Length: 537
Image (cartoon, rainbow, N blue to C red; front, side):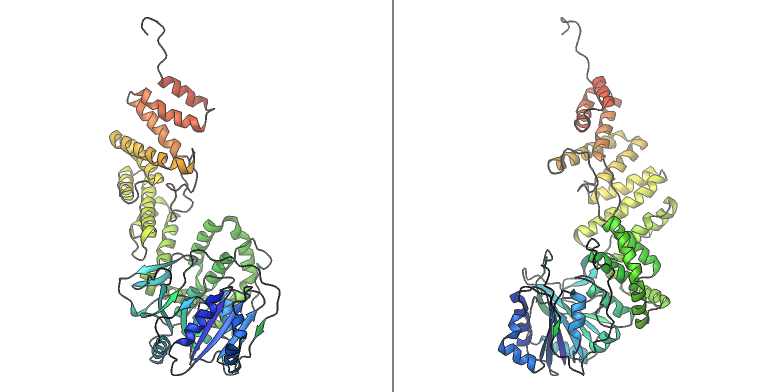
């Protein structure tokens, strides 16, 4: 038997369409049951299940409904929806799916009957654009699991490949494996993390996730997560659970220490909880570095909450058999096996290298690839530029100006408008005495600054300026780079005997700081005084 678990929060008519579509497919030989979880909805999306045809299915036990008076989040909702499920395979579905293959359930049943894997991922086609994920593997960009990515392997559908993660839109897992993993964790709040967490935990425990993109569902991808109104304070209501189904006590209730502290983001707490269970201390420290950048001072109260919850997480890990030693070894095996599919590892290593001394850093950065094949588009570009910039920074500290120039010219061949790279390059060129190249790159940097002024204002340039920031170079804010460029151009003109040509650059500086007396003196020195002899005039 297959057990479908469909969670919904304010999905409107999409929930009914998903349930109807799932039941309209050719049934599997072992039968099908459906468990619907209404997670504190206020839009009446599950009201159709009170109508006679659906009520009859509920009375026969083929369909069960669980209503949460208060929203519990995706992970807890799925955990509760699985209680009582009798199928040998559990399939967790989003409430906004379509089903283009009429024999889907039969093929999924065959997959698990032949014991090809313990978890199964399929192609989730975007119903808006009809674009497929064929040839791509689902993954995480960062250790915190707050940014997903699709790692490109080719253009043809992937079939029979063991992968690190199963996409949560269609998450199929053998019941025995799900029970051994204690189900979806109750410590997660809201949405996010649950699919990659349970997939990764499965890998730690020796279970295999397989991708078969010959199988497909349609999925409604949302550009922005909806904001839900608070549900009213109602009691939970659930149809009876079959006695021979999954037991309700896989995990004890979890106390969230951040309850009543809305200023602490749930995603932040989810990342900390997942990291506590999954990562050995050195990697957990890298996770904290990421979260400090993302959340700043909010990380401090979140860590206080984590310490309050740590005994619960420790007991949870002990039930899974994840001793510190096994956690570390399982993590190492997982990272070694799936490294090419895990851009989050290279990103974390890049940040760790930044903390080394210049001499150690140069040795380490040379081992870091220039390109991460598992990244694409802007992510690949930003990583490559960050990798080159870090190497140039170490060389800069060691005063190896030739190496600085080589690295930054390569960087600028990828992103010619990156102002911190332009700034460091011009410093190195000045120290090397390459005045012609210095003039060229200073003028280019000035044109980049000017191109952004209509949208960014008169300056001075601050952190997160679009031409001065890179997501892989956290904490790097070369502020007032516009002033540095203009000042260098003015100085260059004076040095080369063209003081009048320095005036426009000094005027730009005075536009930002009109009370600067030293600038005014420099400007006066660049402009020749009017002739005193009227006849000469």
